[in-house]
Image (cartoon, rainbow, N blue to C red; front, side, top):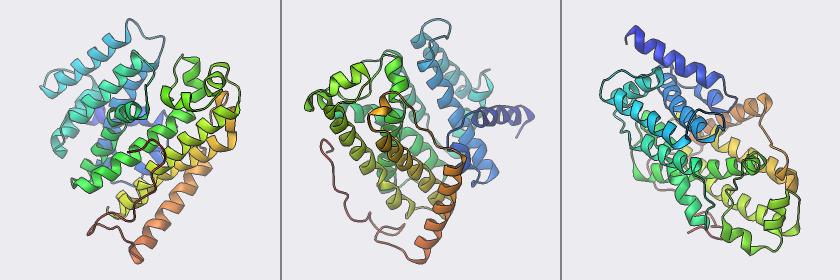
Length: 309
């Protein structure tokens, strides 16, 4: 690897260290080379996400995202580009990954930049297919996992993480004039819309919250099935991420209507507990294989909540 690429990857790793998410906790378990590739992909997504969300960027957000994609195009074509793009282009090349997931992420960020409410849960789920599922597919690709069952389970886990994140960030998004709650779901419960608009609890909002958290738990429930199909290191990584999403949902549920005004976070202690439990569960599953492992199909069907098809 050239010195220029070393510097590009180091830049991406610095971006990772500057954010608190549980990304860095799980990624420490990976070999150094894999951490660098994962950091490059994360830095690309983080940078584009910031362009879609931050109100103080120069010029139009959509134009900024177009410029971001143009720099990706330049790097993939071997032309001069910034360090994040050089690292990403190298990662895609050496690991045999396509740029399709990155394009999907950019579609989702463009939707964020020109936000419109989602009509129903299926529309929201389609957004997750662009905003979250590509990340899981890229990570699986780094581990050399290509089978359709694992990819489908990964899509569910990533959708669940995205749904959990929507509720974690509800108070912040409302201040930005956004709500990722499907309009059709709000209409199901009398007073739910008023609760969102006034940022105060109502029985309707509490019922709406319960439905959304049930859905997120359903999708995150694929984490154990997916972990059983993967290598030990990949299994721990999956369990950390899925477990973090479930822990966020528990915090949101505990806050109830206060989620309209507060944002729960996971601290260092949570991450340590997730790491320990994920390593333990992975070791135990290797000793006592369940109905879902790398040689078979997925385990028992999870009960689908309302609106999930």
